[in-house]
Image (cartoon, rainbow, N blue to C red):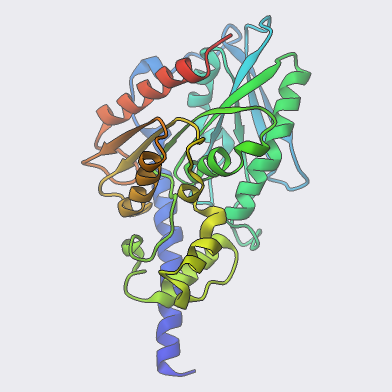
Length: 321
């Protein structure tokens, strides 16, 4: 093998390795670990609701979801709030954010957390696109299961953190027209919405196009020619997993938060989402944690404000009926 070829292969593998390691590190400091106001936490008991675990929506071992059903089961209609877990597309579990799901249920919503097929050695074919298809396939089953238990779901909101934020955006912006019920709102933290080599500099993508192509190929699940960077053809290839490209004038109201020093979901990548929301006049509220990285850990006040806005916007766009 020629020296130059070996060098390029090294950068590809290094970029992929750094991506996985960094995202896993980010998962350890995910949103649910931040100390926030106690009003976003509840003491879970039968007076709040009940939880049904490990319901299946597909044949895969990770195609499972949990339902949180409010104790008040007499209403004619219910809103559904889905939250998708973080973990760098390679780790995490639907149970990790149980406190958030319990709080949502206490507000009167049917809440659901969905697992998706993680990109691991056991699942070499899993990637961001296949995971987004998992979420898309799961949604009709979630609605059907809730209705089976007497909760007539008529509309929904969706949220997520980090990798889960990406999957939530893809469902809300790309797949809303296929949803079995109307999607009324999106909330997410630090989810990558775009994949450009000039933005993903913490992974060295600005220094070696082949390294960038290797990293983004892994996420997309399809080989990318680095010669396409900067072209409309590249945008077309990456659109299936680039949530910001699906934003239009009909996109749902959005609450989002990003850390100024984030090197896991590179902060520069968030600018494309914010611009798309502005250009299409989508109602949105953006929170920037100016002292934090991926976990927003140094800006608990910003995260508390984000959570309060999520609560307020759920009341506005997904009111309890």
